Length: 402
Image 1 (cartoon, helix red, strand yellow):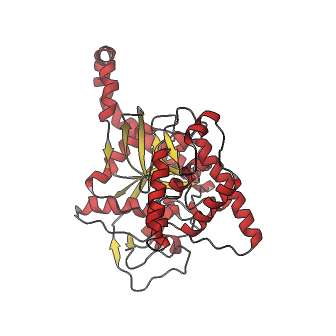
Image 2: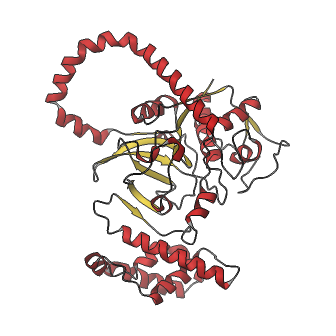
Image 3: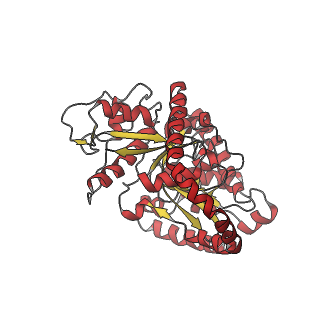
């Protein structure tokens, strides 16, 4: 607590000697909040220790930092009410026992949950898509059964030997979890984190991310080309609806209808809103034939296999929680988080997995499209092999370029 007060005082003094903008850039909203919190008292008494005057100071800091101007006094009152509720939620999250993650108040602090769903998500699951997923899973299982028939006899011979070995070396197996790591980012073939702004087109960014990496793998190029999420949002239909949501299969079908070509981000830049479809003066990349398949619902083992064999994976998550909204760091775990396919509301991309040696938890590494200031530089770590946390494997697709 003493460290926070010293830090805040130093930054404040520095801020007096330069333009105020420098102060707001040098300290995060959460650090500013924490400078007012008596951490020891908060932890012991387990209640919010900020008075109305302090909350008003924090509110003023938030408005200045994020350039908030409201249309009326009534709107500002309502925004302040929302802000205060979110502030309390984030602070009280620090009291949760066995917590494996950190939350922080951020630029979404004056948004309602309905606004957050509208602007920062955008995954649609249609009835026809549900049937498609079931069909894909059926064919996926058939391929696996055929492939595994040739291995069955050999596996039967090894069964008792492996069982006995696992019994003896159980501790070694647990220790090996700490080295269980796979991350496409280490190969420098995952593009930078983007920001969908106030447009529900997460599906377009997730699709572009996957195709960018697949194209590098196909061409063995040394450079990543950013593909246009705006083109997918503007031009694809039959299941996609611009800033009002979409999914991976309709996006792929659209690109196949264009001869397997997609515009570069440089020639068709992101606008943060749906526009008329542009077909002029585009630099188009020929991806070839695009194929995709669905991971069997809830199967995290197959998700990991597909990740290693094919590349980053398009996933849907149930992100209907303030924990996603205000996630800062750590391994996110949400008790009783829905896993049904129909509950998935946000598209993201799995790029790897790992094991946290301090928390003793395996996790998925997931790329988001909410900018680099959210989460761990734009990424989320979500608990792995924990009952299909928030539907990580409920609606997942891998892709291939032929």
